[in-house]
Amino acid sequence: MASDLILEVERLGVAYGPVVAVHDLDLRIERGASVALLGANGAGKTSAVEAIAGLLPKRAGRVAFDGHDITASSASRIARCGLALVPQGRELFPTFSVDETLIAGAAAAENRPPGDPGKIYEIFPRLYEKRRQLAGRLSGGEQQMLAIGRALMSSPRMLVLDEPSAGLAVGVLRDVVAAVRKIRAGGVAMLVVEQNLELAAELAERCLVMSTGVVRWSGPMREAFDNEEIREAYFA
Image 1 (tube, rainbow, N blue to C red):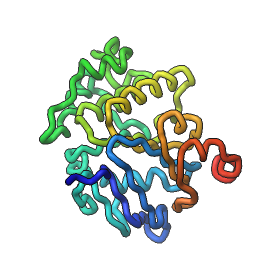
Image 2: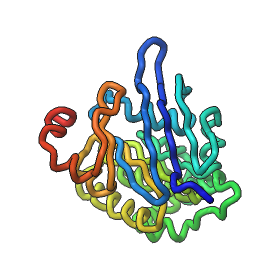
Image 3: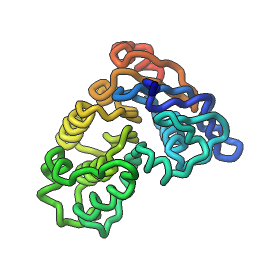
């Protein structure tokens, strides 16, 4: 019988030489669930998800995805397994058109039917209007939409969004949030890395709050949102 967990992280450690960025992180995400990893700049959030996705070496711990141990797997192998990371900074190829970027994203859909660009354009109508434009000429919000669309083209079992609100104007952010909620409704599990508590509350049911590489609090998203002590301690 398949496990209810899509992602299981046990005592994950990440370090840059002598500097420990993440210490003993435990994280479990059920299939179809949405969890937020919260904290201020420098809390260790990005280091944690990049290690989970295979972009950073793990100092300690174990990571399992969809029932398989991926602790020592490469980033490309993890992506082909169905864990899609939308990185901070988007990391698009500036000379690829929107169409070409989506087609490239389908390469990670190993043993799964690739995503349908038409469905991506339904989620992000603005991208359809710019489908022949180069990624490097898009606005910041359009680039964020494209980065998410590229990840969806791999038909992921889980989507990891690293700081999706960074640098976006309020109106554009509203469009991105609405699109992510549609994606969630389709049953894709999500891990949302954020320092924007209000945004996280719109996208996740449960959260972990990090500070200096350590999880300081975990529980229901609504409880964190309503807790003034948590706000003052970690988001002031």
